[in-house]
Amino acid sequence: MRILIISDIHANLAAFESVLTDAKGEWDYVWCLGDVVGYGPDPNECCELLKTLPHLCLAGNHDWAALNRLDIRTFNADARKVVLWTQETLKPENIAYLDALPTTFVLGQYTLAHGSPREPVWEYILDPIIAALNFPHFETPYCFVGHTHTPVIYKQLSERGDTDAQQPVYRQPAPLNGHRLIINPGSVGQPRDANPDASYAILEVEKHILEYRRVPYPIHLTQERMRRAEMPERLIARLEHGW
Ligand code: ZN
Image (tube, rainbow, N blue to C red; front, side, top):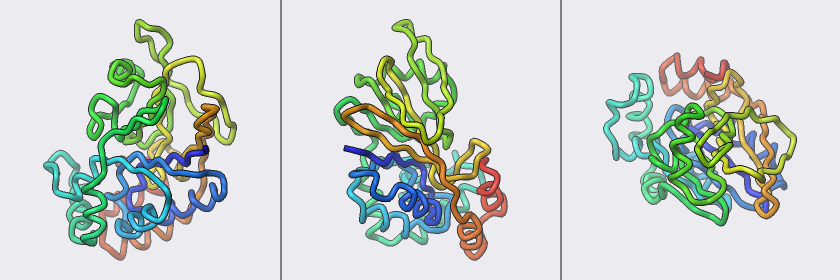
């Protein structure tokens, strides 16, 4: 079975559609690691497209913000403005969809969380030290997370917890075997690794073979829709720079 692994769509329909077109016919099921909405102009469209796919999806912090489940004073002013817009824009059936999302999943050899296995909705795994602290918090060999919008693989090198970070190589399927790993596929709708292309991965579950991918998408379409919705200019500009 081949899994399309996506995260942090952030209501960016053009990016989401470009990923689906790029991966067409190459997967059987979708694992979405959360933050379907927030930041972008298409929260309903992204929920509705995701719902048409065979998938499971986790809750992210922006999904919870859209549900008013958390204190949005922890968000910066620009993000907060779009949270309020998203709350007003989401249809009741899409609110109900987001409301039902779980915070973790364990499937065979894989644990899934939005942020981290230790704090599934909140924690950012930003470096090998934080990754090392998270290995004791899941039991499977492999864990997928999103949340930082940066594709990376953290590898546990020893039982003592030594951990390193590896940058993905794109369009080169590679086996995962040998070490415990925390794997981030990057973000579909708001990459932050100085590369604006949508990021995703394809996993061959039984063989444990992972392929990272990037795909350009029509950023201007998303930006035009954001301008029409009078979203903050900083959020509009960042998409084309990948930060
Ligand atoms: Zn996010």
